[in-house]
Length: 116
Image (cartoon, rainbow, N blue to C red; front, side):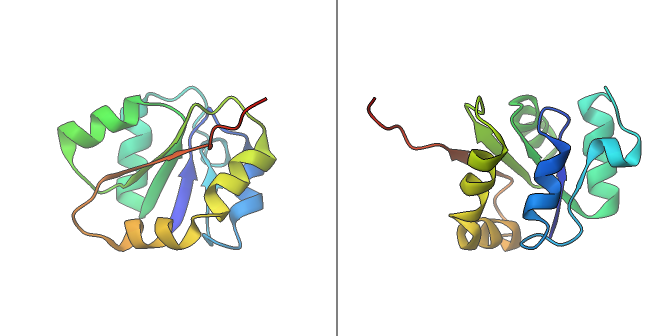
């Protein structure tokens, strides 16, 4: 399944994960700059995307409206593209299973804590 990256993530991240999720794009590539979350939700639903975001607001939409689209949330995303990419790549099989699961609407991915 292809991913639609929310505005709070870098457009470069879409290119970095496109080998795993072919057809993934950033909202800016479809002219969605500072677009309300509900419009992004509708675009994803109508065009077969799952939404990749660092914004908890999409979880609220999933609770209100169900899915599609599926939502993947990068929790505590205060890190760069390399870490975000690793966070998606390392559990890629888990992400693929989530996307195929007809019951689940939201998947949260979180960077593992490490001591200083």
